[in-house]
Image (cartoon, rainbow, N blue to C red; front, top):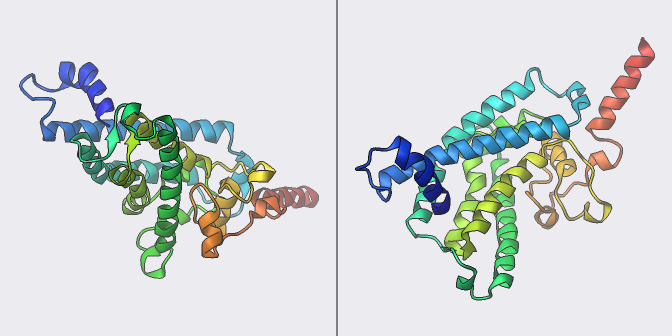
Length: 280
C-alpha cells in the first residue's frame, strides 16, 4: 500500500489536505491517509463493479423469485457500505504494518529468489492459501454459536445480487478478508501483485453473487462460481469455498449446482412465470 499512499500524498494530501509541517512519514498521518484511501477505493470497487455487474450481468428476472425480499438491493447496498466503513479500521492497521516495513512485500522482481517464476508461484500460493483459510473461516461462521451473531446478516439474501457481495456484518467481513492481508506477512509477494490481487478478490466476490450461473463444462467441478455460491445461500451448509471446490470436496460440503441440474433459481422463476401465464 506504500505505492498508493505515496501517489495520494504527492498529488492530493501533501499539496491540498495536510499542513506543511506534518511529515508524510508520521504514523498518525499515514493511518488517516490509508483509512481515507482504503474506504474510497473499496467503496468505488464495490459500488462501481457491483453496479456494472447488476446492470450488465445479473438477470433481473431473479428479482421475481419468491425468496427475493422486498427492497433487497437497497438493503444490500446499505449493509455493504456500512460494512466496508467499519472493516476499514482493522484493515488499515494491517496496511500500516505493511507500509512501515513489517511484511514480506517487495518492490523489484530481482528480490524474488526465483524471479518471474517466483512471482507466478506466489500468485498460485496466494489463491491456494486464501481459499483454504476462507473455507474454514466461512465454515466456522456457520456454527450455531456464531451464525446468528455474525453471518446471518449475509444470509438473509437468499437470491443475492452483486451488491450482496460485501453485505456482511463488519466483523464477519473482516475475518473472511483476513487471509488476504496476512499472506504477505508470511510469504514474499510483489507489491503490485498484492494490489492487483486485492482488486481481483473484490471483483471475484462480486462475480460469485452476480446470478450468472454459466460455467465452462471442464471447470464446473473445479471453480466455485455463482452457480455454486447461490446454492450456499439457498441450502446453507454447502459450497463454502471462495475460488475452488477443492476444500468443499475434501470437507464433504460440496454440492453440485442446482442451477446446472435444471432446478435452480432461474428454473423456479420460469415455472412461476409459466404458471402465472396459464392462470390468466
